[in-house]
Image 1 (tube, rainbow, N blue to C red):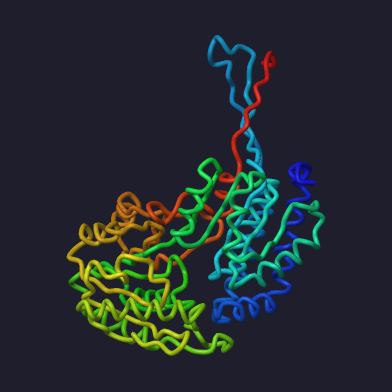
Image 2 (cartoon, helix red, strand yellow):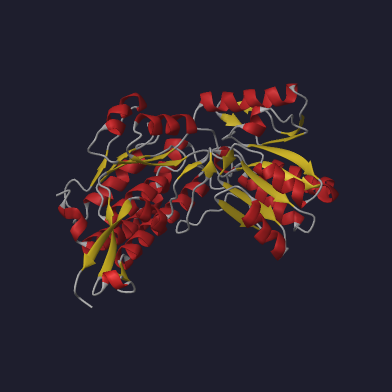
Length: 423
């Protein structure tokens, strides 16, 4: 079954479209399950479900578009009569390892492209959030996909090594922490490994920005899902001449966020995934304050809940500046001009996405050229992701790109057919 699964693009497209429709039909159930599993406010859980609907739909559409390329070789005397046909073939079965923070849509980003290209896929969901993946598995089981095409395999992390090393799985696609990701890459140096790792996302606010919009977007997206997103806003670099004006808008916007019960329709900032995670964020904030940082708001913890936190004057070597906070914390910094702002964005071990609030077209293109990140979002936070665009980072943020079409390319290799004496 595993071999034959790649042969019928029509069946794969129909299966992917079926899953897309069924997620939409069961959207309320999925959203409640996501929220119950990881504490994500129902508002954000619903958004994740609608994104997963799109992710499977994009995959169905791309499956119908997969084609090859013809290259004429008879442009050289030695290749008279020859033509090459180049098509992509999957490397083989895929092991997808997914994190807790998007327990449905990041599973979709592993499963849908694999099915689209005809590669069998095994998902090892995060131990904290296996249920969303299992419910997705139920919908996949309704399709005519051959047996062995997909498996959802909840496993504790300490048992994952055998799966990672299994020679029958030539591709490992991992989303999660850098420490684990790099350990996987070192363990299987001969496999095809894609790593979607952490971020330390910067938002730049320049003097020509719409300050109200910048403040409201940065306030929300440094704290949404309790900051547990690899593109949550962490560092905010504000041009000197608008710094005080911006901060006077930002702090009230952060304090106005609705925190509390994730099941409440109005809640924007819910709990962290565990008390251990919340304690770590609290420690990092305290460490920054002890090092001389100014706490403008937040900084408190109540069990699994960390109050949305804004820090200024933070020492360069503080963890909240250098590492990925993965919590509801943002760090403010003054910069003199665009040069200083862009240098500061690049002064990081990470390079996933960056946001630049500007209305200037030249600055926008300059940001794209100069910022050492996988994606630059102009006029908005770095937290924006469209599921059909290439997504991934450089430096410690990983290797390889996702986004449905990019992932399909990543899971496949070019195979060349040369026809002789045909022209």
